[in-house]
Image (cartoon, rainbow, N blue to C red; front, side, top):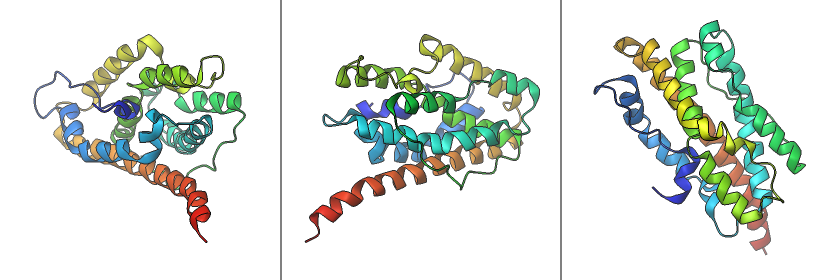
Length: 220
């Protein structure tokens, strides 16, 4: 795996029979996953000239998507699922931006409609999978900037050493609700693809904003 791929680390292969929901999700979202890993704001995380300013701008862009998306996920979510998925990553993003003295971006408006539990689970698959490589990024940024200078890394730390256990719990939750019911797989895939597309649009917009000053500087 490329070094920057840790940002949205592809979830590890599941142990379920071929055709299980996790197998289907990995196959159907592979292209979307590869595209978002390759987008510049994430690819630059491991660049030798990566700056604290870029770090703050990326967190601000992620919060603009995560906060309304998490609200959409939890709206109407059954109590049993809500208890299992109570951690909200937007809180860590807010904390990090406050520590860095940075302002959040305006909230993303084109958030996917997650009207069913199945679509919500597809969105959660994307957000939970994105956390798997977070500690690799945290260690890299601490080495790059110095731990004393960067306190705003709680988003990448996530559940810390418990991240693997949290992912396994999500696999079990997904299996209980989806596996064995092929008709429910398609809305899960739709929810995941729509979430990838939403993140992609916002990160592409961040890259366009970043490149504008450089283009203006080159204009005679």
